[in-house]
Each structure stands twice: as C-alpha cells, then as structure tokens.
Image 1 (cartoon, helix red, strand yellow):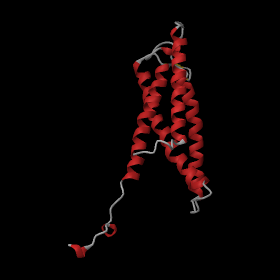
Image 2 (cartoon, rainbow, N blue to C red; image 1 turned 90 degrees about the vertical axis):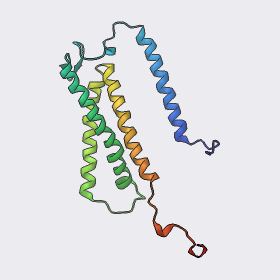
Image 3 (cartoon, rainbow, N blue to C red; image 1 turned 180 degrees about the vertical axis):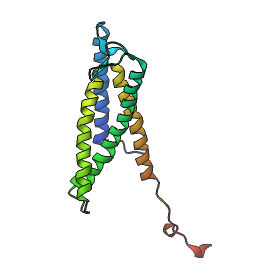
Image 4 (cartoon, rainbow, N blue to C red; image 1 turned 45 degrees about the vertical axis):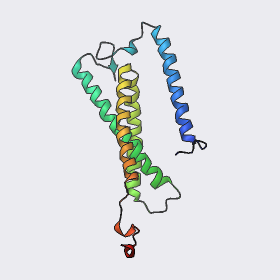
Length: 173
C-alpha cells in the first residue's frame, strides 16, 4: 500500500499542470464558441489551410501533412526521451564519472539542437494553421510517449533471476 502522507512533488506538479491545461481549454472553448468567423477551428483540407505558404486544399496534400506530423512526433519524442536523456545523464552529469566518447558527445548534442530548431520551426507553422493539426500532433505524441514509457518501465521491472542468487537449503530436502 502506498504511503499517502508522502505525496511527491512530481505528482502534485502533474496534477497542477493538468488542472491548468483543462482550465485554459475550457476558457478558450467558451470564447471560441462565440466567434463564428474563426478559420483556425476547421478540420481537414480546405482553401484556408496554409502551411509554409502551401495551400492544403486536397486529400493527398493533407495526408502528406498528417504523415509528416506522425513521423515527426515519433522523432521528437525519441529526441527528447533518448538523446536528451543521454546528453543529460552521460555528458552533463558531473556525478557520472565514466569516460564518454568526445566525438559521439558533440555529434549527438549538435544533432539534438539542430533537430530542436527544425522541429520548432515546423511545429509552429503546422500548429498555428488549424486545430486538427494540433490534435494530430498531440495524439501522435501521446501514443509514442506511451510506448516508449512502457518500454522503459518493462526494462526496470524485469530482472533476470540467476540460479546462484536463489537462497536454497539443500540439506532440508
């Protein structure tokens, strides 16, 4: 049974963030529902949907954008959870005293930063175009994050049992 007296800061932080997000969504939903001239809240390809100056007015163009969003979300999550974590724990952590490959450290750090700027540029252009793009991005991020988190949790939960570590008193047999 969990000790409910010791609620950790990360649990409180997570709940505060979710209350904030839900409050903002409800507030914006109310404001937007009263504004009928808003093109941001359309769905699918249409003549008002422009990304990087390209009109996304048919299904093939729209599917290219949706595919890009999904693939880029996979890359974004792995960049944040794998590369960023590796840089933080292996390069920047002063307590980590094992030698690191200098070339690999610079290579991965620079790839991480270049991708972050590329992603930011594309992300802003896509997200600011239409609400369904935001929903696609969020959905893809949630799916990929779920699978990556499940992978890491499985790594921590499965511990191989070695026969020599099993306490056994053969004399009692």
